[in-house]
Length: 592
Image 1 (cartoon, rainbow, N blue to C red):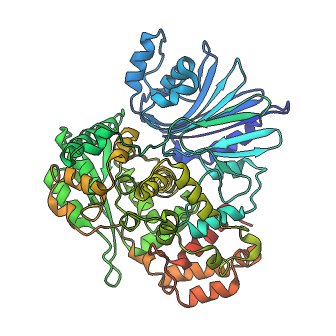
Image 2 (image 1 turned 90 degrees about the vertical axis):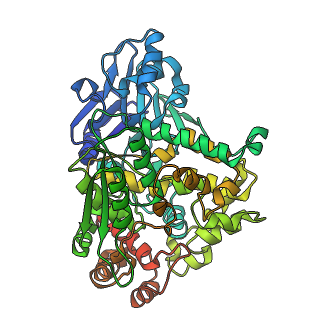
Image 3 (image 1 turned 60 degrees about the vertical axis):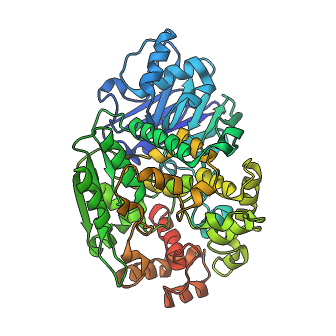
């Protein structure tokens, strides 16, 4: 887990090494254990390192293979690097390190653009080919590792964070109306290639982009999630699916223990993280470190789930750490939490993950986390509503969208709005191209490949990396996800959602954790915007900077502040918090 950045020019200029250096200085938290910078005329690459695999300096980056003429910067982890190394050694390749970075280099030399298909893991990397002058940019299947792009005439820059590109300079920081429309309507999810800034884009997940020396490029998706089922799948019994899911889960969790440092687990007390702990315990992991966070209770809203995380920790005798955060500490951490966001995110649990990660990083460098299970095994409330629907796009937008295109006009200044209903068109196009026939499968496809990437996955990456902590997500093992996609939706929708996963879990963990009401990361102090939080919101939205930006209609802001709890989205979010999140993020990262 690291931070990378670079620049390539197409007009005869040398790459700006000082700009790449500024990128690296912005990403110290992503890689506190080392840094490197390399340039060769029109190309410059920079790297910040967090040591996880091969702790020696031999695996420092940028990494060069002089014989192959390849140079790489890489962020992530290839879990099957040892198996790939043995295969590559059999093909005649010799290795000078014990890490996964060199495996990517040799794999690229051997298999070229097909190499990413062989990688099991999370990754974003850039490889420069000396002989061709080409640069390859690659991102993992679920976009677990980020990669941002800034293109100007004659030049392309790229980095692990949006802020690094802004720090490099010469970026168009004007707001993109299409991205603002997504943010305000699609629960803050801004899918690639967009970001809020006109001058910054994102490489889509599962994508290889090959950039020629003259700036022309081509890109392709090397993977997509298929929901097609063959005749054997249709005949398969529930018990058979459970056996297959259990085997795939065991493999996914075991893969993510590959490290040269200890690996812990973020234990919320919910089904997903508890199942990870149970599977590791069954596999013989002793002394496993687990961590839970809780907050103060506000009114009737309980701020922790310690009763469930304690149950699991006690059942498996883990080395468990409870982290209790008073509301005063939570509110004090909000500025740092916003600084950690590569893009603005509205979920209340951002600050929970931020504070949890800060404490966990004092104990371990790597953790497994349970994100992704709801999007893979149909745990959200909108999936049953879509079963049998003849209008899945409308049904999905009714459940997920915060407001319609017309409703957004009540909040945004006309100059900041898109001129058409982009999110609905996006969902319709995605569902049509998904290859899925079942409306539930259509929703699962967009959630697993779009919503998941730019909400929970991005949240976990940003908040853990702010504390130099690597998070691994076994429920996004692509082989497990492919298996889950083949399971007929009724076997997932039963039992309040995630039925097949719950049935698997009953073989592993106590039923009290499985049969409990569905929980979310509870952060009561932000669910109710009052007191110090309301003051912070009022100050941000009433500031001269906000007024001069003119993004939101003043009458709408005044109405929201007068009744902070009065405007709630279909997913239970606060419109006031959503508006404030966008403005505070802009003030944090683009000060006037």
